[in-house]
Length: 350
Image (cartoon, rainbow, N blue to C red; front, side):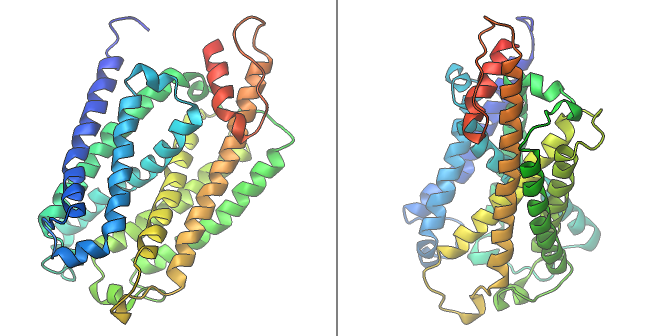
């Protein structure tokens, strides 16, 4: 790469934009955590959501660290797994919003304002809060994902140039396929439930949600269903080596985003609903079906992660084993725990 390449500048702009896009959200969360319910219905609602607000403040703070890691020298020294896991979750969460927001806006343009939406948003939040928060998420998602793509291109460019058929056959391929099929079955169950809810089904939802259900929630259910199907299809392409002549990067990107969406949103909803210590209104009680679907999302995402970690660790170990002597690559033990070191060693030898 020449010294006058624009890519480092683009990556720096993307990182700076991602950091700037977190400021409105972090400011709101800090105000709510300190007892200033700006844009909210009152202090009582914010008191009930104190733990959720603290958690989401921390999540966005991690996004700031990720953006800095993409442009600072210390970012290249961060172990691959330590950076990849939070970025996987962030890609899933923000990528889902990037897909859902245009669909929500399109539905509003075609069908008009959502008649089921109240004057204020859920929890008594003002409309401008959602505009600020989700507008910031959209900008943050584009900038953070772009920064990560440029970072990955520099650090793991060799992997992105390979083809599906280049993935090594190994004794663990049966395990990878077993994980993929298990994830697929769970993901198809998630897709069926989410499609049912997006079409207006109400079984398994809190009574209050049924009465106040908005079009945007239906769109999010639809997008989650699409993510479940996409994660399953792309993973099966990889583990069964379907069309081995095709580039690895397309199905890998689909699996990365869709599985991250399943895990991230499923885990977030489980935690968010589980932090409510008591339910004063029985209509807001969460039936058992909803947590089961969310748990299935989390498990499916983890199975995909396990299959991918095994495959990439074995790929890194195989490349290290055939690297020329003295090139600086060392043979790393196969397995998910070896992934960060193995990938770093192989790419440094390329």
